[in-house]
Image (spheres, rainbow, N blue to C red):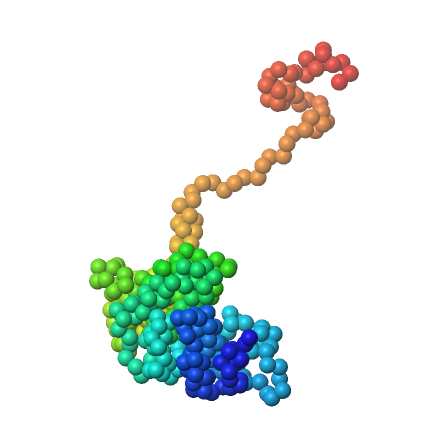
Length: 341
């Protein structure tokens, strides 16, 4: 069953209509008696909102379901991460309070609503995690998926409890594995960003001043920025390589200013390094030419062959033989030992 059938709604791009349909279905659902129905309804809401936000409404007569069975061309994983929901008018006050609906109201109170109280939010998440259905493997998996979607689609209101849920389900232990769902992976990355930001906020941290600079609202870098340029560069490299989600908390204009300055510094440093190398090379060649007082090499003497010696009758061959054979061979000896020669 696709999202639109679950909501009892024709395909539409009207977000308000989608949420009103969800509210009607939720009001008619006994969440405590049938938590699976509530989870399915919540998933249908998320999918319908995804389609309204990211996919064009098909023309009349087009197939109700496309290749993936949910009305998308592609899969959920192939879509860009959706923005947080801006207005949740889908939970009227007359819906009975359940752990699921309480958390739903806290997280989707609307864009203009104040952030939820962290303690109330933690208590609501704790009630979901303590729900009796969490003792059943088949149902706990559905609640886990629902909770991941709920937290993800309500960012940043859900930020205070993301570490709590990540720790409970141990999603971080499977981070980076090929079968890890992208929702779990994104929540783990967000939790890692929180951990890094907490450490950087400590004044005793070696990169604390670099962090303050990168989160500053100052329009220019100032004249004394090179005093901690190396730490800013190292911090940016760490964030971009290991904790990319943390860059969302940095001031974009400060990051852009530093990227520009550090880029110029690297380029200028390379130019000066190349110039220094060539200067050292030229100086070394000059000193080598001045200090080399050895005589110029002489051409090697041509070897004297036996054939050449015998063409001159009055040449004594014995010194040549003695030099070549360590004085163990003479012409007279050759005549005695080898008459034919």
